[in-house]
Image (cartoon, rainbow, N blue to C red; front, side):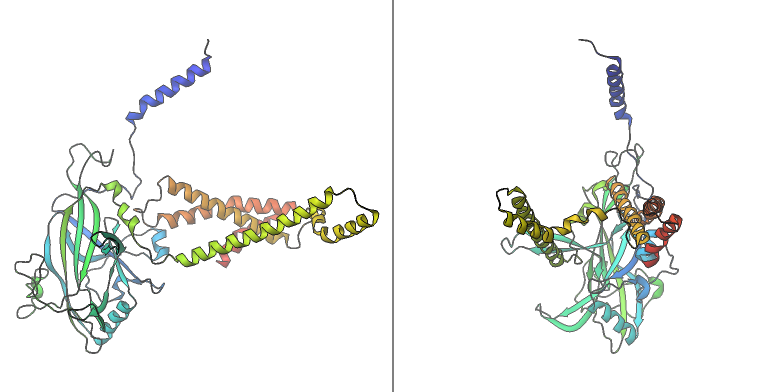
Length: 451
């Protein structure tokens, strides 16, 4: 048995490719590559927006009178973040890698009744604060127990944390008409030591540091008190009488920070920083967000639409089946009298006249230019969608790279304008349009102009 030269050459190329595979290394896209933090290094917490499931309106973080740093810097954003309204700012929160700190004072604010009423309005609408650390969004963990298995608890993560909530009566779960302000935040930051097997090709041999793989918060409402007069120079280490001294993460007996829209009042903002080592690797740090609950998913509407679609499809299919069955039965009948055939021909002319419109298929429609524009725009949107899905599947549109999805959609839409215009012009020329170039120009202006 002889083997041809092309087969031998192909086998040799395949063996060469297999031998080179161990030398290949993975790479990360700009903006998505992991960042290492050394022990004691400062990590920056960024604040973003205030969002609610009760209303589609979202606001900037500093729309409310929260504590601010000496100078607020607007962090760089891409086109996608700008269009989505996800603007990030620097914050007054400070944290050092693997350094636990408790009861740190952020600031003391004196609010007017109007400002307190604004906080209450946001708490009533269940607004949540969005923050991020090393491109990880902050989340709040909630535990639920199953009725069938009370001992088994399910942990669910929700994006952001609530500004406030209803005040519950002491000793019971019954809610009152008053609202409290979550003025103390307990941050838990999870880290994973640098491991060369975690991120191949992105860390040097022997490099030390840690990856941030988790960012959660527990919001609390505490009416802080302090000794004597307020010492502004001691911030962020003001000694508060509501915190154990030295601070250990525990509190003395205290009252919640009730929102008083009638009188206003003073609020002391504080926070804790705790670090926890995690076995989660950097490449898997986004997996926990897949377990989140999304209140914006309207399951009833989705199921209702699917049921209606299935019902209408079944009706159309049933009608077409009955029509075709009658047609086949009539075409196959041969033993008929002359009168029956005449009656049948008359009925066929009346009932099957709609099948004879094939002669008008190649006739240009009354608004041929508009049809050509719609076809070109449909092609543009279809190719844009396919390319976006392909790039997302290949990992180019990682959730770590914020705004990349919306930016890529806009870029693909603009690039696909060329084939869309060409398709519209060709179709207009097929319809014997006198000016196909005007059709191509209309393709690039009609749909974007309406939207």
